[in-house]
Length: 115
Image (tube, rainbow, N blue to C red; front, top):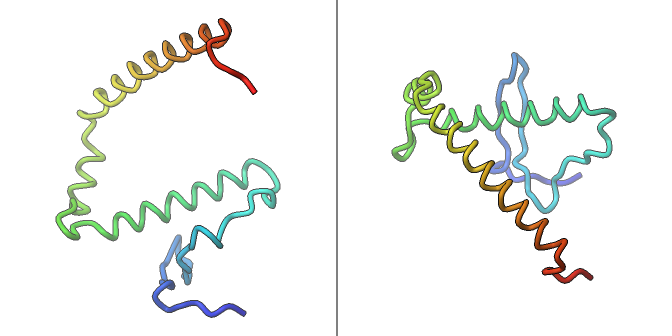
């Protein structure tokens, strides 16, 4: 059995259930995606990880000058910024498509060495 430092453990309640959480160490703790039986399991894993990450971010609200939870909620409800972000994403997608088209043209013309 492996000893875990108390500094790497925390507790939380998620959807009414209590959990003890061990902080992941990237070099040793991973999710073995090969054990997932089908794609729906992947959605469950990523959904749970997203919810837990969002929860952790909200818990840090207002610390060291960051936005408070109320400010974050107001930002999420405000849709004024969304059109600008969507417009930028569309424009950049078009730019990326242009770059890719140019790359393919150059690749087919033999401008890149292949191994």
